[in-house]
Length: 297
Image (cartoon, rainbow, N blue to C red):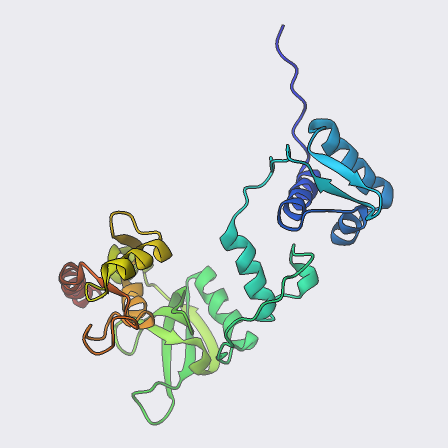
């Protein structure tokens, strides 16, 4: 006779199980009120969720009468979510950056924290929305743009096909009809967004977007042996190398963001802890792709 297996939880119930385990793992307890507040469910529904979870994993929780909450036992192990330190800290960072409200995160007891203040670039909904719409509909859009290379704003037609974040600013990667090439436009520098028209541009011709490159980083050889070991541990390097795959167009921003475009002897090794191992290979690929781009329509 085939073994009877219980049906998997429905989507809504699964989300509540994930939330339950998230709170148990990171904060060490959960109450009915937590489930009720997060999912806008009734007290009986919250009680049923906890009872169903205990039925599945009877030795995983214990009730704390003084706290009126459930705590994980030594047998507790998350079954419905995989604990991830990056995800936890990302939620914390979003709260610190006021990108989301604390009640919109899955964090209950938020630890004391402080994040480096960000210099926020201007981001206008009335600019972003038509750019995204043009991407979805494969249309060109007329914009008034202020660049660093011209004293006055210029009017131009662009065909955006992707968004790029360089660590500080958002760009619209677009075909520029004025320059007949693919260019990154800083969204904060759009002064006006106007009419749209059929673009007729194939994004697959954007070679720097389509091609990928894996940057290889290593500890600065000027560091001492123990210092290099610390850097390897910080970045989780394997055999002294950290391999970072990315689109070719992102390599420029990656170099600038981590100071890899500066001569290694310009800063002390303690300020330039990693160096690029395969720079010559990157320059060669850039040269090849650059030649292809010049032939693009």
